[in-house]
Amino acid sequence: MQNRQDLLVALKRIAVPQPYAIAIADIKNLQNLPRWADIFGGSYDEAMDNLLNGVANIARKIGKRYKVHLVALCADSVVLGGGNVERVFLGVVDLIRETTCHLNKIDYDKFGSFGLLRVGITWRDDGSDAKFQGMRPGILAHYLANQHGQALGAVNVTEAVLDHLPPEHRGRFVAKGKDCDQGKIFVRHWSPKKDLA
Image (cartoon, rainbow, N blue to C red):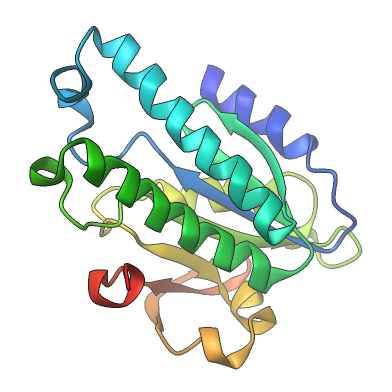
């Protein structure tokens, strides 16, 4: 319940003129999360603080690099917002890549070259239909990022977001066969050969 409250507070803090894309990167489903105390040393809470601080530092750099608004490291998620969908998309791809590289340096055998975050990106526009207004897009982005069983490094976007992406970034997205308020859901799967190049 607290995580949901924290998320709603974070979504209200997005200080970007509408319309804009909301990206939420899920942290809590990281591979090997229960074993992080062994990996980092110390207690589980200390290990989690170490992880979250590392992700937060990466996210801050990415926010500056792509000129997107890093709202918060909110409970178990990184929340980004930006009016330029391409920058938001490239920002989350870099976030996955750089988090993966950060953890590889700590213990490559346990983390390998997997993309270690899962992301959902949606579109908010209070001047449009109700499905694009208020908290609904942010909650949907959180849902897309938190789907259990999905592949590591997955970037899930709605049809509305895909429509705003330049053609050169659309090629790796495939339809998931599911619909949501904002149309079809598309996913871009992680490819170590391409994404860590």
